[in-house]
Image (cartoon, rainbow, N blue to C red; front, top):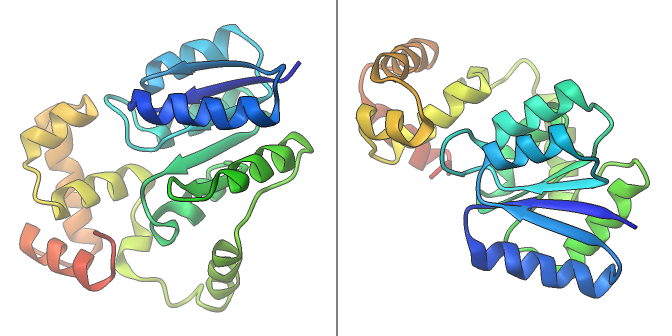
Length: 209
């Protein structure tokens, strides 16, 4: 019996994914949770065959959860299913150990195909992600400024660019205001910028918002 855990803060999304998977795997045992904390507790206490997680959830992010899971269970397949476009996060999550990245707008059959593939111990990579990987090989010395940011810095960068205040970001990410301010300073330094407005303009120009 296949055991699958779904982590997403939207109940409608979780139920929809569960329904799609049960149609393909009728005997599967599927559980769900609304945030990364629940996901990590379940992974540490029970055995699973596949994890499907969102990136943006209250508290810890899906990226943090992915990194923790791969630290303790490197062979456990983790599929990241997110509302963010592939060009924003796909390469980052694959480098962090994910077995695949799917946009939430993907057709149901793509999810089923991805689960089948990762159950075989393989990576699920869409044609557009494959193109990104090939381009990345050609552009290793031509990185864009945001590509030098750590995963955590990139998350904070995205939130700042979207207009959120330091205090809002601190609340959303369960961090102190001081910590977020430190991240902001690092981001501005690494990207050679001085204001939040510059970050926003950069994000728009590079289709990161």
